Length: 195
Image 1 (tube, rainbow, N blue to C red):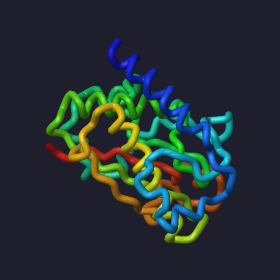
Image 2: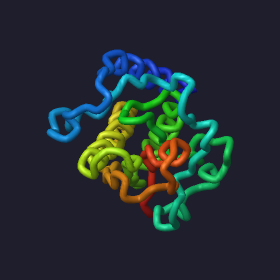
Image 3: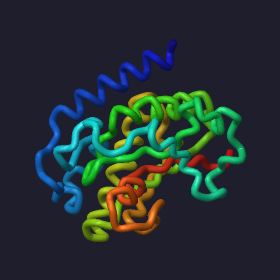
Image 4: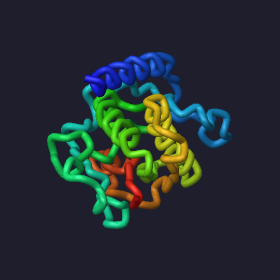
């Protein structure tokens, strides 16, 4: 029951914070740092999942692109496809660092896990697709990771449990020059570190 209340609070917070979405295609403040540290926001008119793009149930991403993310020390709930902890990739709309509603329960589940396991640490890896300059994509990947971190901190997760890194377009999950590849590359991966 506590998780349901947390998800509800998180969903309401996300809706309130997304009500003031910017209408520009690209937010120039991503490059000048004027929004650094704000955590949640949107650099485009893309709101919560509006029926376009991908969502958590369609992708089921686990964020397990390598074996070096501490996954071997995690419990069986991380491999149960019915458990939101098995999803460790958060996807984003084009030019956006706004959390889509479909991923709120996934972030809430990871937050609850981190609260119950204070010795556990994660790295939030922000990524972007190949469009835009390298600098823009690094900044956007960082803002995406900060958005996820901000939601986790609202849930009570300690700063010391969360690390943030941005790879921009440097580590694509999918290769290709079309929307299906770009959708997979606009993401934050939640990688658990060994205990």
